[in-house]
Length: 261
Image (cartoon, rainbow, N blue to C red; front, side):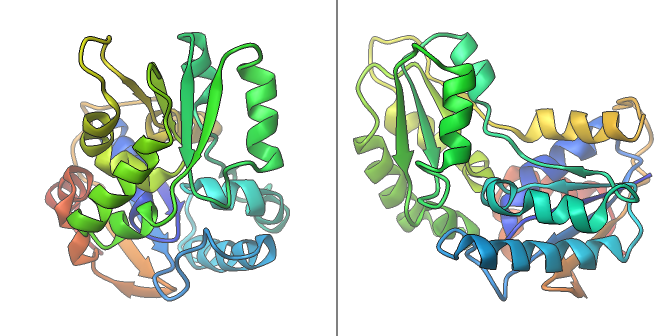
C-alpha cells in the first residue's frame, strides 16, 4: 500500500504521522513545494497550479490514494486535482474540523491563513455545521511560515497576534491550516484562560488519514510491522526529509520509523 500526501511544506507532517500510526506498513510519498511556498498569499489560480504540480510529482510514484494535506489547496485546487487525477487516483481533501467543533457547543474560533479566512468555502462550512453557534474567523498571517521554518520567536509572535483576535471565553479552536497542528501546545498556552474548562483544539489529520484508508478499502492496522518507507519530493526532486521536520514530534516519528527511499 502506498499513500501520497501533498502540501506546500511541513504541513503534511501531521497527516503523514497519522497515516503512519494507522498503517505502519504503508509506504508514504511526501510531496511538498519549498520552491513555491507559501501558497497562502498566492491567487487561487496560482495555488491550483502549484498544487497540481506537486500532486503530479507524487502521482508518478503510483500511490493508491492522494491526500491533499493543505487547507488552502483544498479550498482552491481540489476540483482541478480531481479532474486531473481521478478516477485512477482517489484524491482526499482536508476540511477544517468545524462540524465536530460545533457539536461540542460554542463559542468557537477558526484559525486559518488569510487566504482561507472569510472564503466562501469556509463560510459555507460554518453555515452548514455551526449555524446558531458564535464563530470567530481568525486570520493568522505569518504563522504557517514561522512553523515551516521552525522559528520559535516568529511562531510565538504569530500565535500571540491570533490569540489577541480570539474572543475571551472561546471553548474550542479549529485549526484551519495543517501547519498549525504542529504547534498545538503554543496555541493552547496562548488561548487557554485561567478558571475556564480546558480549551479543545480540533485538527484534521486523524480524520483525513482515516478517510484515505476508507477510499481504498483498507482497514487500520496499527499493530502491523513498521515496514513502510518514505519517498520525499521537494518541488519534484527526490531528497531527504527537511532538517526542520525533526523539530516536531510528527517529523521525528516519521524519521525514526520509516526509512527514506
